[in-house]
Length: 114
Image (cartoon, rainbow, N blue to C red; front, side):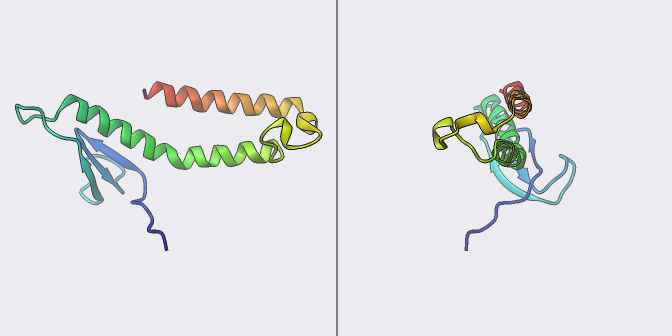
């Protein structure tokens, strides 16, 4: 049986990543990783950026999976026009516009965290 990961939300506290916390002040949770120190023993700026990126990606995972399932459902599980003889004919234009809007929104959110 595959082990489950530490539940979200994860938080970054400087260069450290903690799972199972809702904010930096909570003492519960699991220490996931520490991203290193600079030569002067302060948190390394790259480590702080990496910790933030790890938290953003991990906390977005459930929403990403949900959106991908929604896209498959909204398209009638048609992944590519060549997958069926009818191609996209069975997918209404308004549904395709809704799909495109949701994908644009997800991309904008992801890009705002880069």
